[in-house]
Each structure stands twice: as C-alpha cells, then as structure tokens.
Length: 90
Image (cartoon, rainbow, N blue to C red; front, side):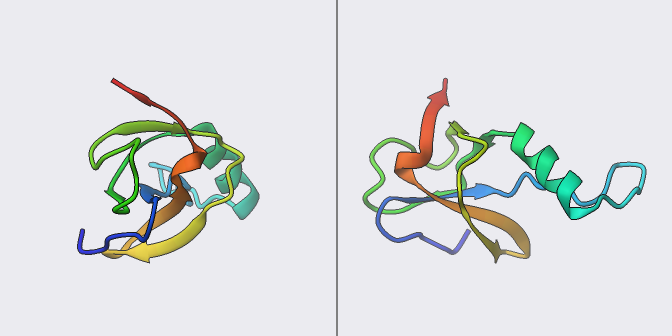
C-alpha cells in the first residue's frame, strides 16, 4: 500500500459485504448489520505515531466504532484512530 496515514491513524479493510457469494445483492441496512459482526481485522497501514499496532497485526475494534471510509488501491478501507482498537490477537 502506498498510503501512510497521519499521526496514530490505522487503516483496516472495510468488512461491509454488498453481495453474497451466490450473487444476491444486499440492501444497505443488511450490509451494515453484517459488517458490525466482523470486528476482527488485519492492519494494513499505520501512522508514524501508532505505538500499539503494526502492519500485519490482527486487531479487534468495537463494532459500533465510527470510522472514515475511503477507497485505496481500488479497495474499500476504514481509517480508525489507534484509541479505537480494543486489542490485538497473537
């Protein structure tokens, strides 16, 4: 990834699924509900002041966390503050 977030921001993949494996297109409410169930994600990039996580770590976030949605490398991503990480799995 060519993007480095500022400060202690962390880039995570967006877990929102808009279409099922069988091709059924989900409405926005269902997509968001499914995304809230997936709160364990892999860190894709971290800012220079991020002390807790590093690229490749698997972290848990609060499913109710507000995040900045963005598109990087033609993929949907989430930007969250380091303080929104609940912990990391080893």
